[in-house]
Length: 503
Ligand code: ZN
Image (cartoon, rainbow, N blue to C red; front, top):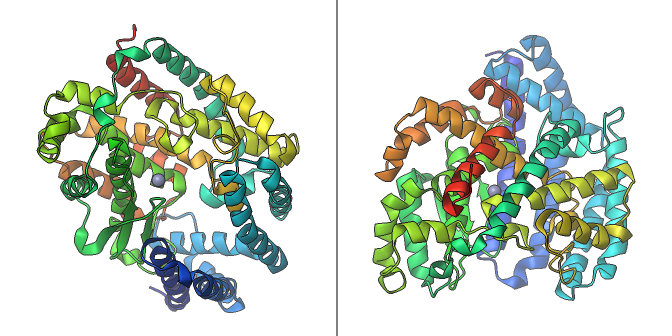
């Protein structure tokens, strides 16, 4: 390795260290910190964030990147060095285009907006949130302008979460997907009584839910020597390096799905992080390549594995031991159907597999219209409710269960939502390839054997971290770009069988 790469890695290591320290503070804040710590914690995080930003955009790093670029030559080459320099250069160039005055204003506005949103949602009153949201939208339009020329003003925002992805591509995939998914949900709702979900709406002791979840993710291959699980209000995964990846979960004592599927979902994220090659430690290549690819891993373990019949053939007898009174008289078939009941609902995070993406597409369409200037903040409640009726056939009774439900906009996170749907599509694309490569996958899952599956993901996805851009990675693995077809095939086959739909 050349001296210039060494020098760059040393500097990047320091940026990564500060980032990890910030992550520890965030994790602690959301798990164990007493509420009295909030103000001082905010200062600690702000100070470290500023230091990280200054270091990451310093002239010293800039010079180190230029020197490394000269030594590496072709940044498109698939070597670790070329890709490290390429990614670092890409992030640096992007960050440098954003004036620090904008960053300060954005941070200040979103810090205030979070409280305003929380209160507006509490009181179910969009008008309280409207003016600060207008400010955020305005700041986001300004942000896009820093990156002119672009094909679409939403592109620079999307690129922050899904590097290289263009709005036009997402649009065309969603436009193909939406009518087909709406049609499927409609067909299911005609025969919704065929699935009875009362078995999963009973009293489920929290401690036993916890123990069952741990038993499952141990079997999956979550490495407890390099990770742990704790409780929180809004489940998330974070890491302080490849050797320490933390997940969090929550429980609903009256609804089985919440706890176990949060645990499985976050474990999917965490196993991705744990599977990155150690050589990328303390560099921008450690960690997942995009939110969409990350979500493909979490949704795969949660849904394609965790909500599948083979999985419950293996684990239902074990679950019954934890809950003999609740499930003693429920057979595996009835239980499998119950956890997969499809029901158009108001809240995205509680949505089933068949309706989930409709919630995401609705937000994507609204966000792109906001960036295009075709919709303004004041119109959002109406636009929201109209689209909910169109896609899901229900109208939110109030703003809290409608336009105010998600935290993202208050944090300025426009451009983020599409990655949730992309994750579902990519998970199905990968799954078709996995089934080709591991023909007896179902039988393996039925016997709680996951090492071959995890090994496949390690080899094809995890080990590379952020070395390849998301669509490049997908292309390398499946030989094709983003497609909704595998996902639609999956939904139709699974729910066609559960609901006894024709053809
Ligand atoms: Zn996730």
